[in-house]
Length: 244
Image (cartoon, rainbow, N blue to C red; front, side, top):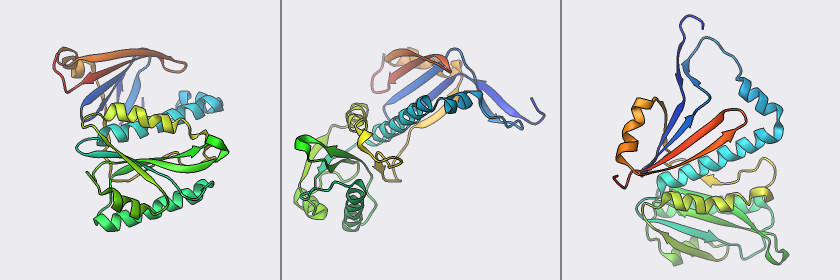
């Protein structure tokens, strides 16, 4: 390795959420983390790019995980699940997105701040309608007057449902099912929209001694998978709300 490099080897990725810690342990692969004077393209990335379908699937999985992370980290306090429909048959995603963006601007003016939200457009195919609507979570509005919300939306009907506190992971999985229907999206179009003021999980690389206490103090679930490039990967999810 070139002189001046400050690279360390890690094989455990730690992700911290408000109520959970997730470990990803790579049994057959070490990651070089830090600054190095050697600048080489990762052979793994090269192989993935050569296999276009695998690389696209990997990107889709990362996008889905980022989406779920945003939900899990922000569902706390009074969060509400809203659905926004169009009275007119809005069949173009661009048009639907513009109308939703204008609604967010009206809502921002009404509450005098930028709301924390994430939303997914979904194409309704029942009865061959092929029209768009939106599913959204507002994380910081609390109990918002239904009639006022309907007036601010002004494009059609709205529905609302409260979300139980500290239930972020379950809600993230629930919302992800709408994301998986995103084959209807046009190429290179966003599959979800989120405000920039959302909290994110803390990501860090750690060593075994840094996480041994988790196994002694918190209940956990575990699973494993085999990756064509990285080999065996073990996942551990620790519930911080409960002690062993």
